[in-house]
Image 1: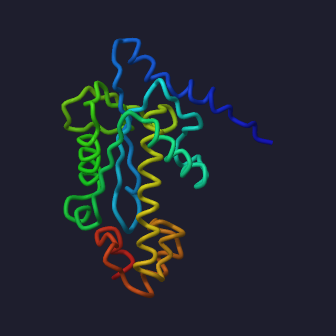
Image 2: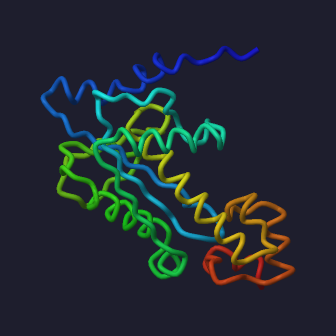
Length: 209
């Protein structure tokens, strides 16, 4: 049987980078992450979050390790307690025009520009952005930094909700189930129905001939 993770201990473990920065005199520390680099349809969404060290959000973890119910509850708590949150959304048309890496960076830049106060340090998962702020790249940061994990939750939940809306707008593709990722059912639907307006044309050339 899998041992239950103590949320308070998890929070402390994942606050190492934040605590180190605060020990060096910094206070406004932001985490950045994205959701939706890999799907065949829909936008890429980035979030930038400045958590309040006086109001911890216990249970925060890499969004991929959380159930949808837990993730949704944590998103609400993060929104209530965080000092600031920014969300950037770049749609499939721009992704096709400038490629997914550049679109991801654009979404992250948009998210960063929405947070206030301006962060003194940006913790980010393995990307470097052209922004006027000190940055620290952390490989697999969404599992190691509470700030990046919080951003991953906001980005993932925001994108999932958008894809649920797209499921209603474009029925038959199963967006509510796979959120645009390239599952066998999704690929079969593209082959049967053809692409819809939110499909990334540069991602589906193998399936559309």
